[in-house]
Length: 192
Image (cartoon, rainbow, N blue to C red):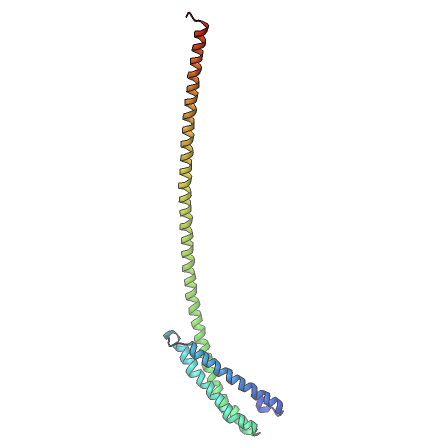
């Protein structure tokens, strides 16, 4: 539409150059998506809508623009150019727009489905992580309790052994004291 009303040759040249750039980008992206999509059944709706319907309607629009409209503009046949823009090109554009809207709808539905699957996966993984954490906590608690019990038993055994040794030393000292007293008594009173 800008090209249709532009009479300045330098601006017209810019519009035509921009249109050529956009056409090249359109075909480059189409080539990219054609390679990106495989024949996977989950993507068949997207592949069919984009690569057949949308792509073909866009290609038809560009063909009319490049082969009929632009030549009319260049020969300054603005009446024919206006008829083409408001006729065939508008029809092809609207057809293309319908397919693009359909593609957006399919893609949004697919994204919602993928988000749902991702949420389920994250929830399952979170539950598994919580369970593993709980089991690790219980394992460490059991290991800690067993270690604590073993250490306390060792300490109690050492304490018992020390108490027994102390008792033996005390008994030994007590016996020695008794012996010494007996000997002292015997030395004081040798007759007795």
